[in-house]
Length: 314
Image: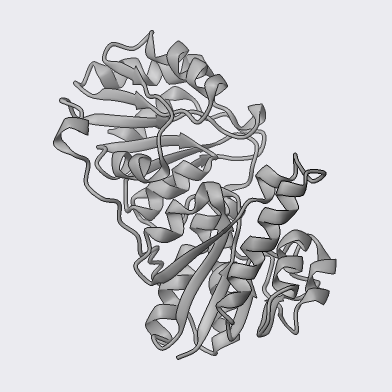
């Protein structure tokens, strides 16, 4: 049996976009044993896929603030030693960045990745022994699928299968009313949907007997959630939670409305009905993908109105 280390470290949406490639590989080459190297804060996502044997973690996001500390280099050394100890037959860098390519270069075994014309940081391609051309015109999900398909010599099926499921919520964790999840928080202000739009939409849904849940990942996001929730009857600003718990919450919702953020893609991967709102990014490249229950609304320089989103909720 051959062993593979798949390198896809971040961000949350990018990690989720790589899941269907694992599903394809497990189907066409079941003899391949798959491990996944990911940022420690996202380790729960690959662990949801039953074809991933082990999840290895790296902590570049945390370490970058402490590169001058001896403890950082000691931890990095031990993490790499742990990975090298497994002696993978090959590694595939699906990230295509210099930082991920350098990690691949430090590992034994055959190294595969995108060629210099297929990634944002062309220098990364010089760290691989074998490179593969994948079109920029493809959605991010398909780019990952095509890379693994070229390495192992198969054609991915038309159907996209993320291959994950979240554990059910405990009875004590389940809201008393049917609920909708608003994924209001994102990485930059230009991708946000206005607070007044969320309030308007939430008030209309609350009149239909739906509770509104608003997750948050930090204090700033929680404050925003509170501003929205206080204007909507039966809305709740949730405290920070684990990705696994959030996955369960998304999976059991009536539907999900979200901006361009990793959790919106997670809801799609969980086969949920999703309305994805885009205001500053191109959904053709990185929008929600692979599900008839998911729809992209808006785009670069576009601000979808409440009425258009409400129509899709019905």
